[in-house]
Length: 193
Ligand SMILES: C[S@@+](CC[C@H](N)C(=O)[O-])C[C@H]1O[C@@H](n2cnc3c(N)ncnc32)[C@H](O)[C@@H]1O
Image (cartoon, rainbow, N blue to C red; front, side, top):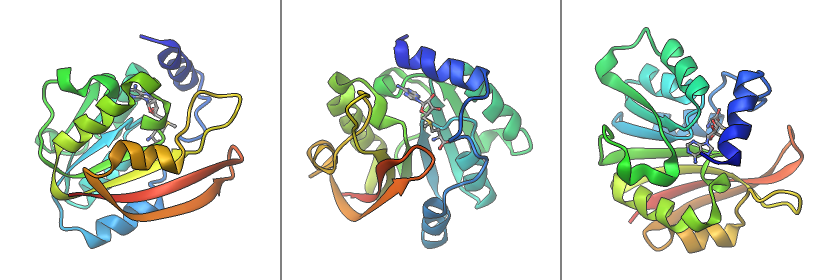
């Protein structure tokens, strides 16, 4: 694949993945308390922590991550749940159109720290693919870091607007500091128009 694939693979293999806390962010827990159970897709699902929470809340949930080690750990974490309630795929989110087995239309999309790192040339396609996978009125929870000079990862709020509107409307935009890496970050709740 590419350098980012190698970087993420090595970080999972060497257990240098500080984001992999086994804790589902409160922003996701809160939205699950507001929405009726349905079908969700977690982009860059890592080791399946959020999928587990979704299943515990009676959702059906699929996940995609391009690191096999992460997907293997997700399979282990989710082994107690009925197989028909979830799928985890080892695949790039930049190529969702070639992934067989997804179950659109989804009611809820989740991207916690994944899309903002894909190649810039794939950003518009990623946004289009997501718009095609979610039902009208569906919710998209997006967590991004803002760009920094020494990295090619990150989206600005303008990037989010350019990529996701008008197919999605912005319901909320909450700025904070990711204290684990001292980076400005933003939680978005978007709604498919
Ligand atoms: C910062 S981690 C967050 C993981 C997970 N969402 C969580 O909160 O624990 C970003 C994840 O996105 C995955 N990822 C990055 N680029 C990807 C791509 N192009 N396709 C699929 N997964 C990708 C990485 O392997 C990693 O698991």
